[in-house]
Image 1 (cartoon, each protein chain N blue to C red):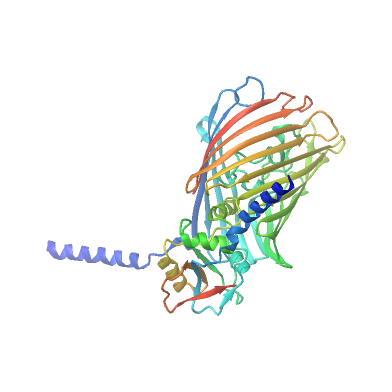
Image 2 (cartoon, chains in turn cyan, orange):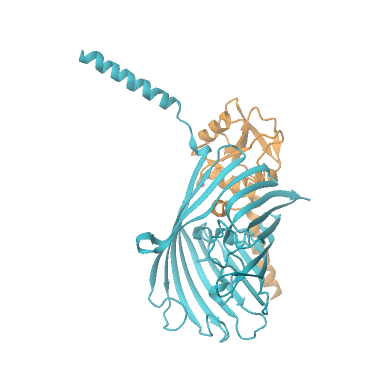
Length: 362
Length: 144
């Protein structure tokens, strides 16, 4: 009796196993998993300045990036991010959906997206969290973190919830790409801008990039929004602060060299007060040696208010990026900050900060 | 002073120009035998492998497939077609992936795996090391 039972069990197990084996499919066609992590160290040897005099380590981020491709026209994307060793029970760090959207390709020249998208502004906004994809220690503050150099606001927010049209094409032999994004504007009150706007004006961002040759990129981006002005009780006054920014981008990559430069101008004008015009620019030159070492030098300049004379700030940053193996990169950079006394944040205190990072892409 | 500058500029030009001059193909571009394409301009091949162009003329999806980053044929292909070293394209794809713009072509570990992928996918296009034996369902096409 036991033998027939064993035989039946074996047959059943085999019958169960064979179809499973026969149905084995290659999911790499349909599902892609990538990600990145970044670990940082910052130290300001002097006692004065806005750097980190305590020489701190930062478990800066860990991201998983999913792409699901149900058909050859449909893609669902999500970037899940954990920042600064997030621990919710201690209210520390940050966990976020960096971006997540569905994209449908009508033709190469027109893809449509709906969801939470990063603003297509300049070279770095869309990859500002992906430090392994940035050969410098961080994205240039003079354009992408203007508030850290005394800006009243950043030139643009990081991301928004809405619709995007984008595509690639070629005209007269010149390749190019564009993106046009309409999202809920930034909310200045308590509303979650990824769920509900606090006024009817939508934020618009547009970018066009041209590639006259394989090693030249010329781009221009524009951002506009209207911000609700609230009274002391938190009630919408009906007044709006207008914000507009644009950035011109240039990238030259002949052979092993990589040279980038961007120039941005932004305007923030409240309904009943004088507006602020700010400008920022940077240039960075680098060379890839032995397919592994990329020394570079970067110069940044930011003027938080072009109507004030003594408030600009600069950063000079020599550094090196070393690809150790695969997607593992080591970065070392020294930042020399210089500012004039009128700078709202740096207040004319010059200082140097030494930084290092371990960045991994997979 | 002027002659030194000229020598320096000539040196930079040689450095930039050298990779493009490497025309000795150590790779062969391959498609499924059912694909009517016989040749492609280099620029179109680059667009396909950068996923700027994703459809064949008949509207079907193009499925590019690559060898691993360390494969010599990939280095040759990348330099000849994209005009860049492999690590520059790796960096390009990291930016594409992490910005959410696109996913890179699939990678297969060996020439045989690329051939098998192209054989079993009518819309596929790949490259293999020159001299790789191709079955009747896979054909080589010229890069113009």
